[in-house]
Length: 232
Image (cartoon, rainbow, N blue to C red; front, side, top):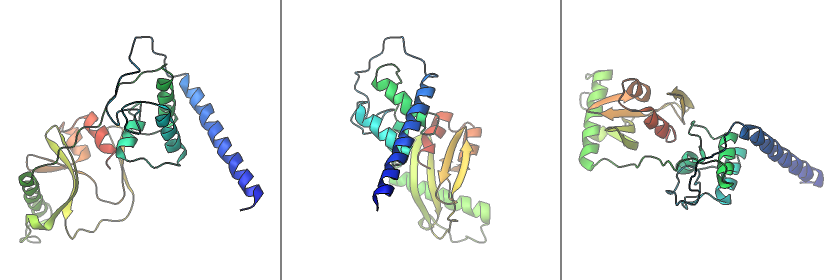
C-alpha cells in the first residue's frame, strides 16, 4: 500500500469520526439534562443498558465499544447489542452513542434494564413441544403426508423464554430446507432480521403462532417483542 493510500484512509477515518461527533452533538440538544438526584456510581447488572463489557459499570471502555459498533468496526454479541441500545428503540444509532456519553459525564441517567433471563425447558417440556409440533405439521400440511411423523423428526435449533408462559423457538422438521435469503419483519415497531426464511415460532399451551400473531393476541407483550428482536 503506497503512502498516498494510507494518508487518504486516515483522512477518511477522521472525516467519519468528525461527522459522527457533529451528528452526536446535534442530537444531544434533544436529550434533556437530568435535574433529579440519581446515582451514577451504582453497581449495575452485567450487560444492562450501557454496560457493553459486562463489568457492571459504565466507563470509557463502554463508550469506545459503542463508538466502534456504530462505525462498523466491532461486531457485538446479543447481550452487547441489547446494552448498546440505550434508548430501547431496537436500533443502535448515534443517539445511543450520545446517551451513553452523557451518562458517563453524569448529565443524563437511564435505568439499568437487563435482558430477560433465559430459562431452558426441561427435557420433558422439550419432548412435549416436539410432539405438539409434529401434530401441528400434520394439521397444517396434512396427516396423509406425515402419518409416521414423531418427535424424533423435530429439531429445536434455538429457544428463548419463557415470556409470559410462552417460548420462542426456531423449530422445524429435520428435513426442512429454508431459503438462504435475509428475512425481515417489523413487529410492534421492532425489526426482526433473520439469516434465512426460518422465523421464530411462539409456543404456548400446545399451540404455535408466529411472533406477530402472538403479540396481536396478547400472548406476549411489546417488551417481550423488543427482547426477542435481539435474538432474531
